[in-house]
Length: 507
Image 1 (tube, rainbow, N blue to C red):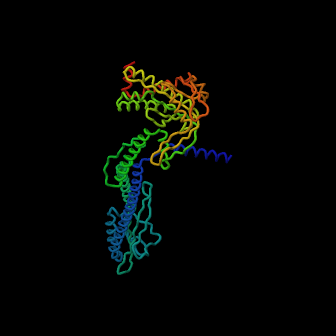
Image 2: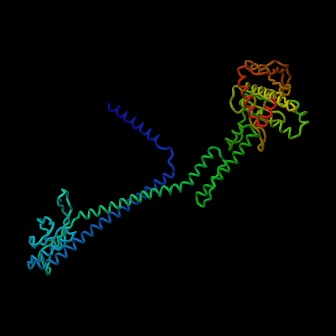
Image 3: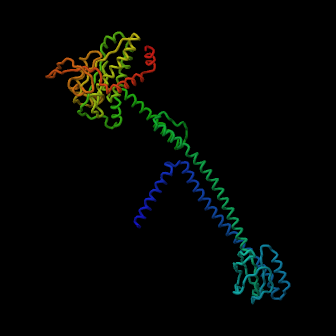
């Protein structure tokens, strides 16, 4: 039973701790931390100062009370010594009466050496313990009951009355210590209120000052968040001649470096495949990618009749044409998970299943080829309407074992694939006709359930002992048509606005 109760208590405590952690803010602003520390230091300082002043005030009031009591007692003793010897009761009553008229004195008394009262006025203490033997002034604190039912603290000062160094009697002067306590309490309250007021003002000042001090850090935090969002153009436009100024300058230099790095990465990704660029930039200490044998698919897409077409165009028009169509090919390749290996004149070499594992690389390559041909058909309709020459592609595809890795020198290299399967894909492309996609029989056997293809002739390839049967791919099966149409529309929608307007105008 006890063990069960302990387990319940532990679970309850754990749950409360988790809830408390969730209630606390994840980050506490540095302005709040600075204000809290400064306020605590100011409160500690003001409290210590208040206690010190209050203690000094209490000691001062007590000292003043005792000095006044001692002075009154000694003065009364000096005046009463001769009347005591002469037994002049009238003079003694005059002394006590005059002294009792002082507001600060609650009682005065003159006593014989035996302790017998000779003349008294006001409040007198209990003197049954014979305090008249002391040689000097003594003080005796005591309490009396008031009419309100409370107790009042009093102090009686007892001094010897001497004549020619002979003690002839004693005098008693009684003062109220409650007045001293009230004065001390009032002084303490005033100090406490002043301390609280100063603490509040100091807290406000500390918060304002902490906000001012943390404002540059807040600006730096905002700029850092902008950098984290990818806004490398962010700068802190503040000139300071302190440590924070050096920090701002360092941040701006860092942001400029990140901007340059981002621009280099963007430019780099345009000259090589984005996947290759990402792998290289992810490990700059070891730029060289590992050569490895893989099973992949290679696609060659070549513009038919390009030489004759380029003779009729200006160099700028040739460049514009190639850039436009290579852009479409790159988009089609990316949609099916491939990478652009290289552009060779008017020919594009694409690879599938090279950088990332792709068990469906052969079908993705064929789908990309069909997409390129359908896209070219759509674009040719617009080109015919504009009176421009049409662009037709011939495509060869092959899959098989190949080596993926770096080729080149230490000064310049490229990541590509090589092997007999790659050479055969290039040969198939050269054997294809305009608007035709050629694959070999082995590849058709792998994909015949997913593509529409017709057998073509048999090719004799140099270096191969047996001829290679080829098939011409017409289209994809119905199950993959929806995705093909969606990808085609996406590329058409991504064209520059000017080209889209021209296409709409000719519909």
